[in-house]
Image (cartoon, rainbow, N blue to C red):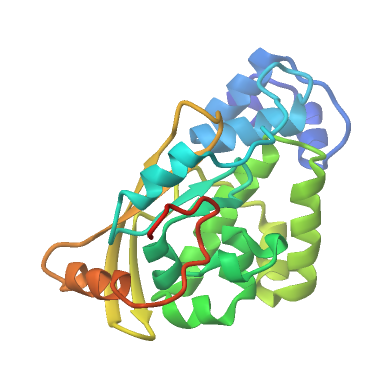
Length: 247
């Protein structure tokens, strides 16, 4: 591998051992090419090995806006969420709260996709093939946190999950890195039964570094009618940060 990356065996060994060494940007690019890293893995390598490079930025500290909340609400029976740069859930619509989690009933410390995946038993029961989804989400979370070395919010969540989840403790040291979430989710919902959803990812222009997740029903599965059934339930709305009059 050192030969393919055109670096010395000694330097490559030190890099594997986690020693404090300084590789040039070109050497890191050659190493990433030799390792056949995907874009997320390449970014993770750079942020670990050369945090001084311009690609290392601090996470944007921002909240949702009324305009973004209205966008989520306009999705009607399709669940939608707004995520921050660490996969924290900043906003959500009513159907998201009825399909997944009503974050409005939870403390802010639990408004996070990874926390819900590993620390919420209801999510484990509901998600078909939970282990595959959990490992995938963990790899995406590592890639996101890798962009912000030393970020206290990432460190606090990692520490809390290590205390809470046996699987998190076992899988976090593996250093798996991923760039994309699994796009199809099958759920055994406690109210309406089987749901099959396709996940779509969008990035709003502002705030920067935020992500919109939109879930649509897979045609031919009966999911669409069940989502409308959930959306029509008379449950007090606590999910959205910004309420519309008469909603």
